[in-house]
Image 1: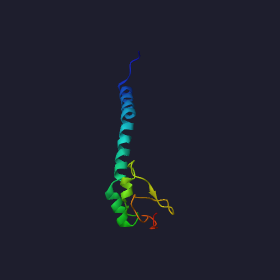
Image 2: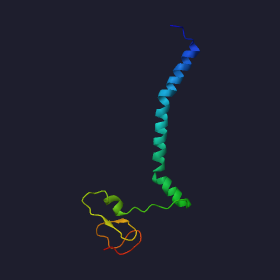
Image 3: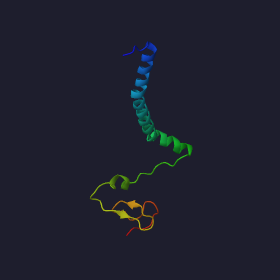
Length: 96
């Protein structure tokens, strides 16, 4: 086996370190960015600047995933409403 110079060995070790650690660093950077984007402080800041609307969570957003809750969709706009709602949460039309 041929002797490897010190500079070539250092270069190969650095390339291997970048190849091994690079994707991990990029993954954690992306994860941190996604956490920042879902942060309520960011949404509140954008809403205060008038760039975005303040979200309006409705009870159906939390209860809609329950399997034993029957669907109550508006015939006019198709929005899902809570089971005992009398009016649509989106278009305010009377529900049947």
